[in-house]
Image 1 (cartoon, rainbow, N blue to C red):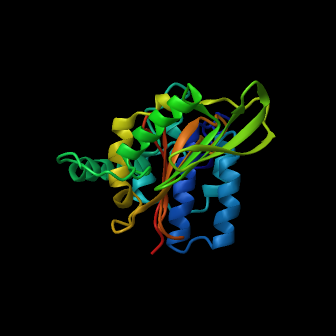
Image 2: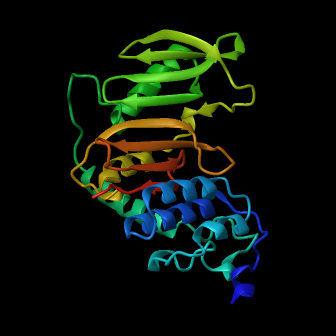
Length: 263
């Protein structure tokens, strides 16, 4: 009924609700309900949605996958102002948990001894990078950090002038590359708040999470998420190859978005 479909339609949506809508749109594209351009247009609308009425306009005419039937985006009766983190994102959380379980299993074992610098897309490499970062800058604050296996790029406020950003490269040593204007309201990311234990399992299981178990991690991007309006800090884990997907999680390891590998 129309009245039930529009229940609580003026309620503001959460980032999780926008992510659920995008997961539904991804499924609709994958099973032929939407063309590529239609999917792109609706995804942009979903990520800019402020209320459930906005999301309803992009999902109302779609068939619903079983794993998303009980989400607030699809079932208005589940739209509750006080249930911020109790529902939604079921498919994303399930996929990430499967990957984490695989990750915990595959990361067990003795320490690896190697004299070469550790790969910065691994737990050991991230920890070594953070230690070097703290030694060099005296803190763990940044605007954005991109970690590749053997090199990294960093954007952080210029020393003594927070209106400017300095970009550094890192290959065992930090080199200042350029200075640009910095967004005045940009909140600093505290790299020290990254939950390394959670991230370790997510890294090891990322190929399984995105559905490309033979893929390898290409790079990590630590930045403010483009999902929704909160713009919280996040870690995106990208697989090698143009069609192998990526996973975005919060600094605490909470799954935010999974882009599945395309077959």
